[in-house]
Length: 149
Image 1 (cartoon, helix red, strand yellow):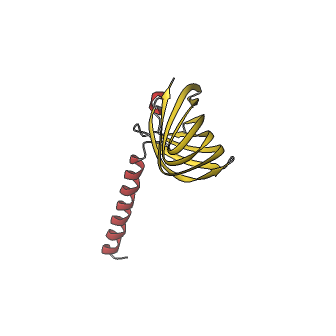
Image 2: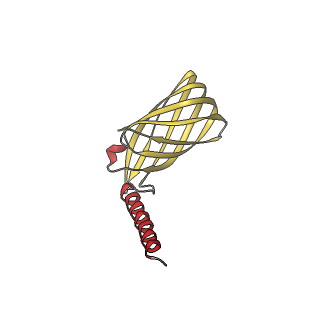
Image 3: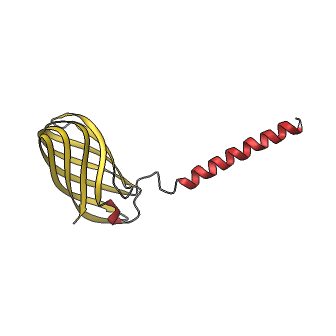
């Protein structure tokens, strides 16, 4: 192999190593769940939907009571929602409190599952699976606020 080819191969290998190292350094937040959350809400909607409820948040072996309030646009229906999910990017328990925004849309009739991926201003991400009792339709951005009790 010529000196030029060896230098080129070494340069490409060095660039690849630098790229991998910089990507690894940027991933300072875990890619696995570090907590769990469960809550139940009741919602009523006729154009603008409102929901409220309570639940628990688990982090580092401790349980924390939470309250949930939500707002949905272009919503119609009455439903009870049970949600359970994983919590990501959490540094301390109080980080879970905040306003979450996610994009969801769909129709749920009598127990249909809905997936919700939402993030708050602290960078906490919730990956929720929710089941509904009742009939509801929503389209567009939905948001909800979690408060520590």
